[in-house]
Length: 438
Ligand SMILES: [Zn+2]
Image (cartoon, rainbow, N blue to C red; front, side, top):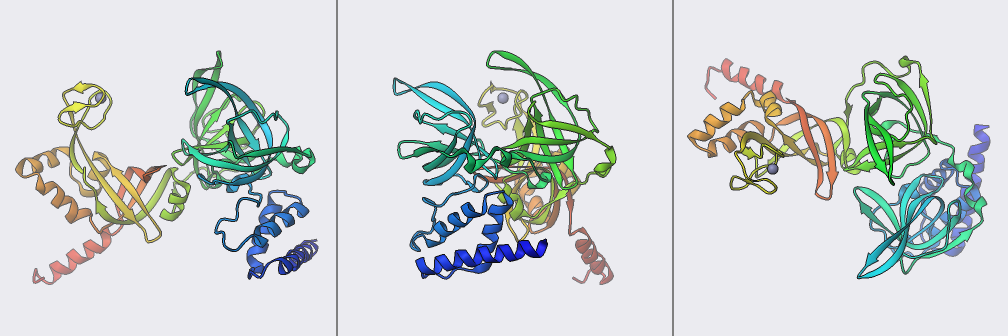
């Protein structure tokens, strides 16, 4: 059977290459084509459609670097700020809303669209006369990022046509299996098996109705994520459950699995997931690509100690750092002293910012807030010198939550250890052995 499928795949690739050779003089790598074709199939796009899409893509003008306008793009591949999106989508939800633009009342529509690869929020800035369940062929839509989530917008230039609903059959919404490490914005209809690390219940008001919401942290062997359940599935800390039919939102790059009464939740034997869930180790370029992640461990060299590091005074109410003894919200207050260090970490694959508080610094350098205060009393310049001497160009392992925004990714460090401690110990030993000659 496997042989059959491979042969089929090769003959489809041959077909595509044949057609392309008549339409374009561009050199097309078979391997690349194969990869893209397989991706379409993985998401359940019918073979003929996948072929058409690739033919359109590769026969497009070689001048354009982003051959997006006529090529169908899968929801999972949508990135922010694409100006000309051509896509196919089924309307999963749609809500009407009246807004006032420059004194004029206007109707807009927002909701969620889905295709074989996932779901995405949309906003229609005019009435395109479509409804729930319609399958739409959309041209010249555009994407934006809103609260770290990609959204698709339908504006003046956008054309939308209702199309044969068979083009995106509802069975395409069969949940697909993911690990928590793989979760990213826009994925819909997912199937995950996770352990619940904690549950917090709260009440919110949605459209005038009170609702119970359950949220917390889930984990599997690959990582951790936040979750929000809009239905009482009787979740308990320590339960291992399989959730079918959730979707992913992200906040500052941290994936958040959301599911409601439409999802199915099944309790499994607790040994399905290993007892000790370890912190996910991640390379910096992976982390930067994701934006952020919950509870990760990274290792790298400190290549910069940033301005703003050192002793600070915080507002007792909101913990914000005071400027000229005043909080921007609470005015003149008696500040609470604190110590923090802002760094840039590089591991050769990428860089992220790091924020280390008193505790993390104590772990790294053994000095307390008191020690730093005394040092600064002698001479404030000594603080920065000390930080440079013991942190700059040193290798460290950091653990914490990483948050991403337009300024990059920042890890809020909970645990810090020197990764090159042995090296410096060795050097010290050597120095002792040489009797202090060097
Ligand atoms: Zn304040």
